[in-house]
Image 1 (spheres, helix red, strand yellow):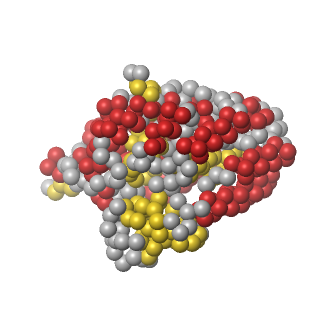
Image 2 (spheres, rainbow, N blue to C red; image 1 turned 60 degrees about the vertical axis):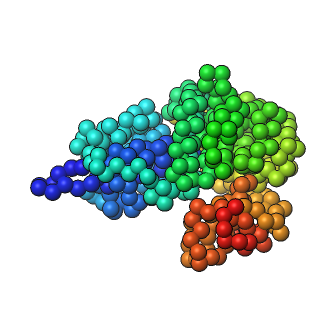
Image 3 (cartoon, rainbow, N blue to C red; image 1 turned 90 degrees about the vertical axis):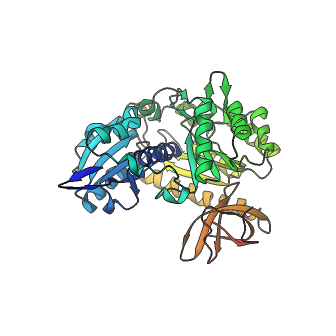
Length: 433
């Protein structure tokens, strides 16, 4: 609490996040820490005394979005303290510090100290205002899926990737800490928890690998849905996928591909072959038939020829992904790829992106059609004009119309028809699964 003349006021903080699920997890944890310290969390920046943006720097587009958000926050609320943190802040603090209105730049290494920094700067909440019984709906701006960080950093150094430079080497959080965090989120009312990190398949703490961590969470918490954010194909083994016999594990696997051309994969310094990737996909589909397999595809990597792009396109078509996140190569200073010859022009990148995006749309619709006529549990998240949206366990986006409040409810829904980026459904009974 700070004093203004003879009056005091509770500090209001707006949190914003760009980029990956790891950023979302760290932002959610920061929100809880700030709320427990007595700060009031608000959603619109116009109402905030402090605005904190957790930035992303994985591409030049992410950089641009971060700068735009910071400038917009200052324009909308010139009196607010504007703070930039995250990967962009770690990579280029000087760039962000020069943006008008930015008062503080905090890199990843100091991100966890933000509550203490605010306290020492005079932005203190009152202990009497500690909110210990926060529920999902009190977390302004956050979805009904909770993100829990289990790992950070990467040792792989793919030739295009800035992440090891801004996140450092691989490190895993203690098992007990992760389990306690999941319990806390369940106690708050979350029905689904997503485990996230830079490379969660590399999780290893005191000899406990990802398999062991999942077993601890399933055995020691009451979480209804447990989802993994991303895995590498070389991390897929029968022992791991066998855990999906437990239906609390969501049948959704995000396997980053990056390119369907073996030559491009080699130049990217990716540590698997196309054969390895295909074997991982086949294993998942054999053991988890309803699995949703999604991926990332980069177009326009240095030296990518027309033939190599077509190889990538054909491989993606053959894999029949449920969704494909398509993005163009973006040079990042400090990575090996910026030194490679034959940089691909923006016009070619755009053409290839459009073609791959068309395949992504077709693939998503084909996957969704497989489940039409089935009744599946859907966790509803939000509504717009009376239309609610949520996701099945295998991450099909589902829409339905209801006058009831379906927020954070897990309901059986009959999937009727493919519509837009998802499926239209009809709630079978408006009570929870």
